[in-house]
Length: 196
View 1 (cartoon, one colour):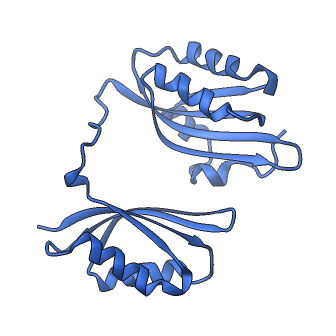
View 2 (tube, rainbow, N blue to C red):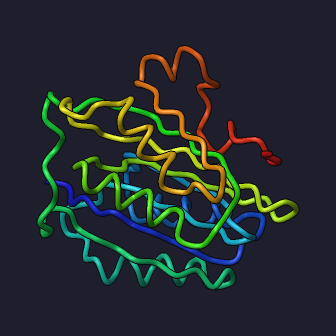
C-alpha cells in the first residue's frame, strides 16, 4: 500500500524551481494528489499531497528532494497523515461560506477576525490577504466551514465591528451565491491589486 505524505517546500523564487521539484518527485515514483503553489514577496512556496511507494522513508524523501534542488536552496518539510491526530471532516450540518474583508490595514486585524471565527466554531479552510503599500488598503478572502447554527447576518455585523477604526467592511456569502456572482478563479487572482 502506498504511503501518503504532505510536503511543504520553500525557497527564493527562480525560474525552473517547480520543474525541478516535480522532476525529483517523479524520480521518487511519487503520485501527486493535490497541490497549492504561490510566490509571495519573491519566495516560492508549495504544499502538496502525494503517494509514495510503500518502502519510502520520510528522511530519504526530504534528503533526495533537497539534494536535487540544491542550487535553489530549497527547504523541505514532510508530514505523514497516518501518524498524526487529525481533525475530523465537517459534519453535514456545516456549510461553506466565503468571507470578503476590505478596509485600511492595522496590526492585529487578521488575529481579531480569526479569534471571532474561532469563538463561533468556524473553521478557516482557505485564506488569501493582501495589503496595498501605497495607501495601506487591506483586502482578504476566506473560505469558511460554518455550523448551520451560526446566523450569517449577525456574524457579518460582528465582523464589521471588529475594526471600526479601519473602516472594515465584510461580505459573507454562501458558497452557492459566491460562485454564481464571482470570478471562479483562485481568490488571490480575484482580489484587485489596488483597493480603496
